[in-house]
Figure 1: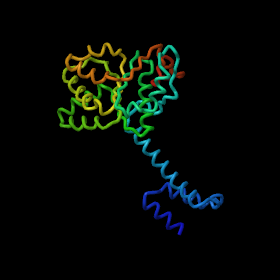
Figure 2: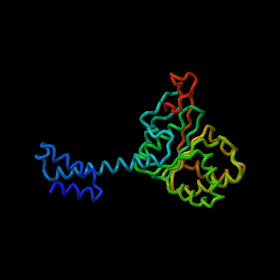
Figure 3: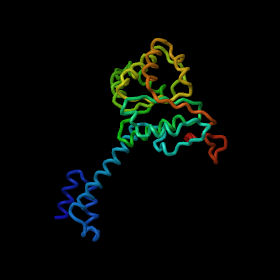
Figure 4: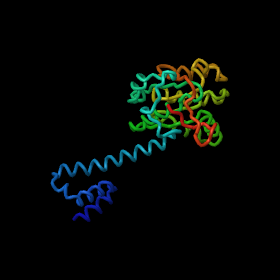
Length: 254
């Protein structure tokens, strides 16, 4: 009977439950447990396994540059001007459920990408979908999509993520076509999903990046309205590798 039960569980794709059932048969201590207690252990094992697999899938799909980044590891050195209270208030990702945006600005090396990845990680752990793009790569993909017919498909995919992280915004000025593509992305998500933008430039300089001032007004109005902001400062958090003097570690401390 035990052998048949194990086979049936595997046939039902309940392999973890089958492993837990086998483990219970091998442990004399479980014999004293009630049916409800043992059944709960079986269900818990299968449930936790599926949740872990779902989290791993979400983290992989998110494309975070640092999947291990977490809000618990942030460096709150006063020089950074990182508000611990604000981070704590946003850690539950309710702002994503509310379709609010987030803007993270600061000089190179101040931990902007790490902070964005930490929020992305937190979102995945709450089983929200996340997608990360460098702005230059996204605009290139959209430009290619106009030529090969995949433009609409890519835009539809971008709409589906609960959180879209746009990193390295403002490294180059935006040509008119890129302005239009960016407007399409932001407009589709406006009021329906959250967008997190990371930039070395202060928000006050963003308007000048757009070749089309009208589109700049439209994009920034949608991004900035009700958005949460972090403006980081202080010295670079990148560290030299001990075995390679002068080489910067790609992962900032916070």
